Length: 410
Ligand code: SF4
Image 1 (tube, rainbow, N blue to C red):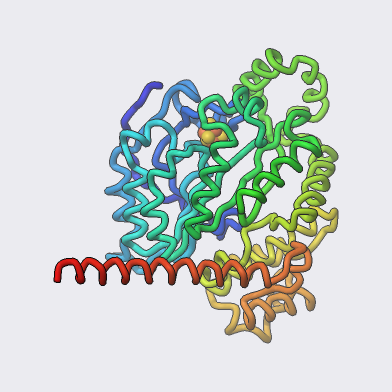
Image 2 (cartoon, protein in one colour):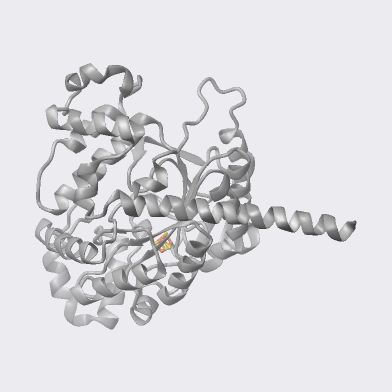
């Protein structure tokens, strides 16, 4: 591993609109490059302009905490940052890659996030995140934290080939279960599943079953992209060594699409398999409303719910206007509740969409989304109640400990 120390001008990446996968408007990458070196990683693609040898070299943004401090602080800003989850991870550099052991940038960033009262969502492949359970627990109590792990399968042997630099899936699942038992919302990002290797019905079902046993609250799923150039060459070299018979199958589905997409038919079959299995296990395929309903402002809440509905309909092969409506709402400056009568003047908002928006504004919920997810608000309510019980229990334990120490000092 070669480390290069660099100074960053900014740390928070502001998205054009709320990201409904992560429930976030701000992404945060403290490292550039990733020595976890997953074979399928698209950070290797030329378009990301990561300097040096991907997987071996990493740039550390040594001034990250100072810059983040300035960005999170409301001081001197006409418009402070909106309330939503700050996303750590999900870019081209795992927040808990090996360099984090020494630099502790993620730990110190979480302390700042806690100090400025923001919720956080961390996506990683490393069990090093357990080191920061104390801060994540505190953020969760005061605001909210989501801990997600990404997997390409739950098979330790296959993972050793394609994810050589990270703990095996069995360890990642144990870590998820530990965070879950602390009352923190947890998710599996089952992405990318590797074509013809971890995308089979059996492999996907095993992933969903084991995630379900670990107690995760949701699974977000996606197929693999493979861009021509460095990413494809590196992946094919490993494929040739371990699965040479699969090369022609890959050549059939990856035919040089600019974004590295496989054929639409492949993704559509895959989505149907996942959708069926997720429903069998009652597993939400998006972050459940109970996790973020009270965090977002009303416009962002509507945008996220409409995009979730759009996604779930797409999985069922149904085209919908909800994605378009969500985009036009994301561009609004004024709150939706002030324009209830004029909703249909917005691009993409028809009578049915208007009904869904009004229900969200009035109840913070969408019965249509619940039906599509195949889960009821009872599951959401259970999550809220069990979280309240855990938070109250912890408060009670703290009070008892304080009383005991007073008694002792008497
Ligand atoms: S952990 Fe994520 S960012 Fe790092 S190499 Fe693997 S896929 Fe890429």
